[in-house]
Image 1: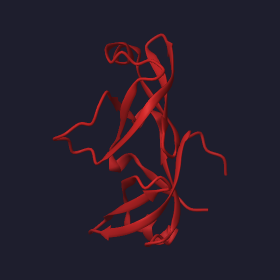
Image 2: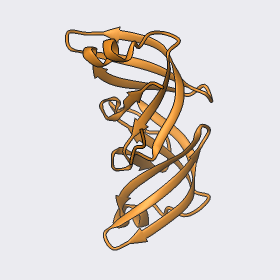
Image 3: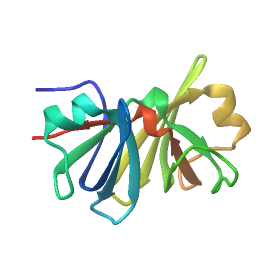
Length: 139
């Protein structure tokens, strides 16, 4: 299956914490970075997720926010450090490609935000991703 989601990070499930309807799934990326995904219990069962499962963490570029440094006091669990590789600005939006330890992430942000943050190739950034915006896929 081919997907339009460009942000695909390989990793291994380190733990699954079930709730009533949803579960949090901790994923250790190949670099050692940890991500948390919130998925339904049905998805956990259907995908056969458990510690040791190989997965791809999938994130739409519109769900990736950028900060110019680590952010404290925030409910967003996933903060991935990286370096801006490219900023493509057109009209109202900008596409920002960020090199991270596990490859690259793309963020779709407003052109105004990219300008306000002074984003350019070489800028250090932190990609922020809510756990509810991470989908998981298995092979």
